[in-house]
Each structure stands twice: as C-alpha cells, then as structure tokens.
Image 1 (cartoon, rainbow, N blue to C red):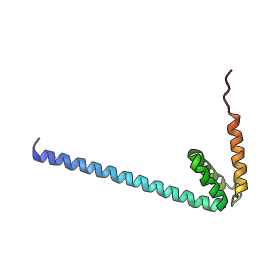
Image 2: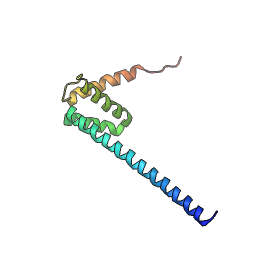
Image 3: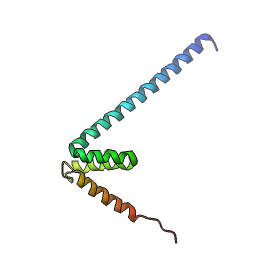
Image 4: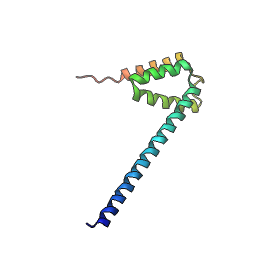
Length: 109
C-alpha cells in the first residue's frame, strides 16, 4: 500500500470510530433523559416515604424495582392508583406481589 492509501484508511477508521463514539454518547444521553423523566413522574406519584422504600428496594432487587416503577407509572397514568401513593399503600402492593411470587414454586415429584 502506498502512503496515500494508508492515510486514507486511517482517516476512514478514525471517522468510523468517531461516529461510534457519537452514537454511544447519544444513546447514553437518551437513557439519562428517560431516567430523569421516570424519576420526575415517580416524584409526582409517590410520597417521599414511598420513594425512599422504593430506592431501598432498588439496592437489593434492581430488576424487580425497575419493572415495578414502570408499572406504577402506567397505573397512575391510567388513573388506577391513588396519587400520591403512600408508603403503606406501596407496602401493601409489595406484599401482594410477594404473595404471587411464592405461589409459583416448582416442586419435585
């Protein structure tokens, strides 16, 4: 390869890497914006005590909590939740969900 061809190849690779970096930055930025919107909605839906309980739960069961947050937002938008949802009401929801999870035990025969 000649020097010009090598330089052109380097330039293309650099442009491709820059494009990938830009795409990753946009993806991260969109993710952060969605998280901020979700947190703003949760602030309007939950009392501070309920939000604290949810954040404590998130430390232990992050996947479960992420799904629960989305379900709470959907239910509130549909008008199926009292707003603001208090800590005691959130505890009752968690107890109901825990009861459902315990029912699905696999037993050996």
